[in-house]
Amino acid sequence: MSLVKRTENWLPSTFDDLLKTDWLGETSNVNNIGVSIPAVNIKESEDNFLVEVAAPGKGKEDFNIELNHDVLTISSENKKENKEDEKGKFTRREFSYHTFKRAFSLPETVDHKKINASYERGVLLINLPKKEEAKVQPKRLIEIS
Image (cartoon, rainbow, N blue to C red; front, side, top):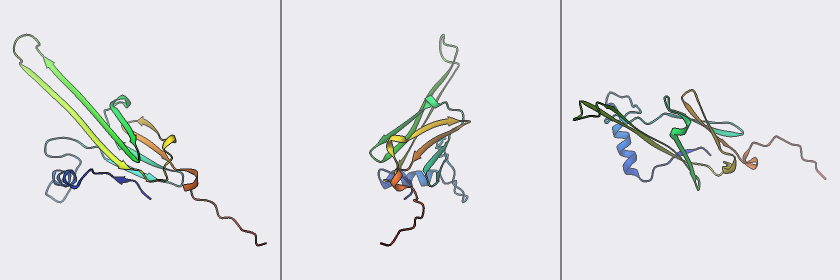
């Protein structure tokens, strides 16, 4: 069983699909209001799933990873204000708000107690180990009595 992208209902997903299409045949991770949704790779091996989230320029303290029942939610929110000339009226003021939230339904084979995460060179890595009983068992010979 694989990890599944979770959507609460069909409407946000439909809007996401519309906003992420550039209408020249390509899709991107940036919608028409400049909000970036980080790309995610999910690798499966015999022992685990590895979720890789591309998020350059962030620190590990910028992420929030939650597990609620079988739903893994990865989110980040950055608020940044660049201020110039605090006295009198503003000559320049820029606000920057970057948020994202990705949610994935985990298969029953994931061992929730052993999930861990790290952040290396712009990539958030989330290791989702499989339960022992879900791992591929080696072939064995059964004796006939």
